[in-house]
Length: 142
Image 1 (cartoon, rainbow, N blue to C red):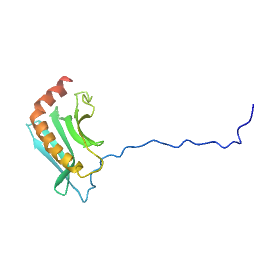
Image 2 (image 1 turned 90 degrees about the vertical axis):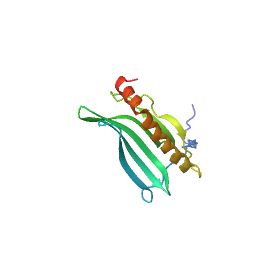
Image 3 (image 1 turned 180 degrees about the vertical axis):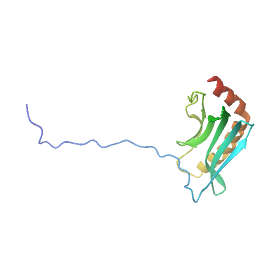
Image 4 (image 1 turned 180 degrees about the horizontal axis):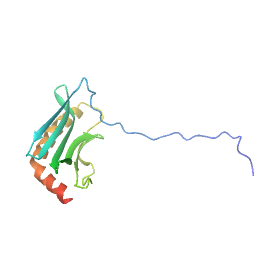
């Protein structure tokens, strides 16, 4: 058998393409705001949003329940991984929706901030309207 150890070995180029993801402007110059919206004595929405040029460019809206003196996250709509998506948690910590996509966010282009801005208000309205159903799913696990 021939010894090929002195032969020049070709290397295969890494052709892996990592897709570009949406990234909001950094803070500062964007301004982060955090605030609660009380639903009942034990239920609230916690809102985190990042504002830039009078637009919401990043957000997370979390539904929290206080039960037996403990805080638990019930549901969440947020934007990361280049999409607005939702989570529905169960009491044992499972995510029933596992990043259920609502809307994709392009990495570049002038429309991306408008998509996030509009998505924030739609998500806030949905979380306010659906909090009782989210709480039931959290308790029932389905």
